[in-house]
View 1 (cartoon, protein in one colour):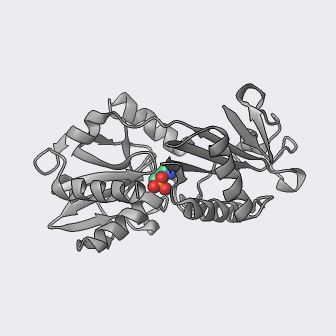
View 2 (cartoon, rainbow, N blue to C red):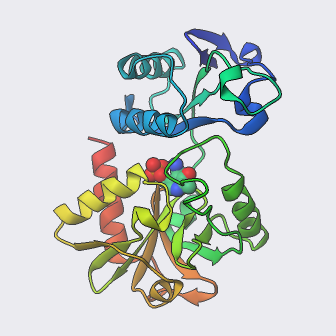
Length: 283
Ligand code: PMP
């Protein structure tokens, strides 16, 4: 495996950055997780745009242009012979002092890892996923915006631990108002009376690129779409529920907190949107 670090490719064992990098010391940096389908980097421009927006929000200047970044991702994917896989793109603040002052850091590091992908087990797509709500609240958006895809994922990791302890592969997080926010690494949707409904960005969630793609596909397919605050009650009483994410694509959810959703099986709208999404990725 060849790993790109700031302009050069290194063998996996030689791919190293400083222990003084603020990415390590403080989770001070941003990242993206991107899919490669049939040798093509999916939603490439959108991922690069979100990376640069995350960086802008934390006052991190990425030391290369967007087009150079796109080229670096493409060449790392090619160098690793990946036709279907996953790219992790990371930009750290760079090495600094043992203090928070970003003026004492230098040389942000750009890291690109192109690898195969670990997916949810096949049974989950066939039978649906069971989900629990966890007590770890999504970060208050006034403290740290979930729109920033930062290297500090502790909020999500703590929620994921609770989900795993409960025997679930994902976990539902609520926001500071007690509304449905998102899962630890996926956005959430429900379907009720043919309305496809997902929480708004203002609920304090990451603006998932799969979420946005599925919203467009749902509109094109003639479903009514709404981005409105959602409660757990709305999910308990929905006909269908599903998650979206770069790795998950569209994954059916068949129960939440021990309540069966709809008839407890992946629903027709979920399956339709998954098929439409897969068509889009394999074009
Ligand atoms: N929410 C969170 C917290 C995430 O980490 C992710 C995965 N990046 C998502 C939602 C889904 O976003 P996307 O569709 O862009 O992968």
